[in-house]
Amino acid sequence: MRIGTGYDSHRFDDSREMVLGGVKIVDHAGLTGHSDGDAVAHAVIDAILGAAAAGDVGTLFPPSDEAWRDADSIELLQMATAVLTDQDYQVVNVDVTVVCETPKIGPHASAMSERLAAALGVSAAEVSVKGKTNEHMGWIGRGEGLAVHAVAMIEDRAEVS
Image 1 (cartoon, helix red, strand yellow):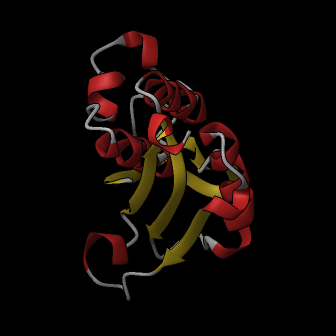
Image 2 (tube, rainbow, N blue to C red):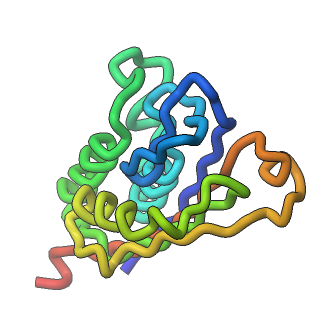
């Protein structure tokens, strides 16, 4: 078993659509970013790649590469999962915490778990998504953006067989 952590944060951007964990959240400002700004997917990518010692989201999908502009981050997560598969690893489970004042994560958590799980090749029961506020402290508390923490456990498929 191997464990990796991921982190991502983005500012809110009124000109963009909000996408978190592959789920569109209407009536809320989106997030800045080179791709679709899905900070949940980005943190999960960093967690699984970190567990495999295979780099991070910026290495695999550099923001300097126009090929990734406005990319669907769930598709990027599928590609990152393929990197693990190529190294003979598989995801066991993922735990995600979204830190923000808004939007409320609870009403969307199940849908996010399902989208992330499908991209990771696991059941939704293996992907936890939850929201926490920052108690109105700091840049998150002022509503300037949000942050995401993710932890992933992976296993070597060769050793499991």
